[in-house]
Image (cartoon, rainbow, N blue to C red):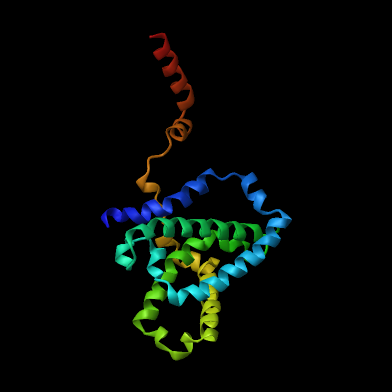
Length: 207
């Protein structure tokens, strides 16, 4: 559990891929055949998820516990981690394949996903505190489907502009005071700064 290294290392590949991907990579998954293939793949994943939910320990997705702590042999951890990583990549590709080229009402929501990601945790914890999950109807197939739509609606609302404006002070605070201004910008803003800097460099070279 030191520094949550297990979680850091298992999620790190996603961030590295995000830095390495180029526009042409996204164009590959936006081809027509990939878009069509993404539909049955995502449908199968959805059916499998509802089947696996009551049979699988959800703690696997948090990447914080060892295989032994989850009640399985140690060797299961490696294939399970790699399998979830592969499934995640496939589903992310399916998601990118569906992103429309035109702008719609939900296009701007992409800039607010951080708010949905962080703020939904308070509602999730509150639901456990107030025992919302104890209702019998939630444990029926229709209840699970209804809860899915409610959760999707809530996360969508959390990504909207009003919520962003309300919580920007905490999510995206202005931190200019904590960083030094770029030396090039300071040089340009100072009277004659650019000329004095170039003269100093010439003197150094001559020296």
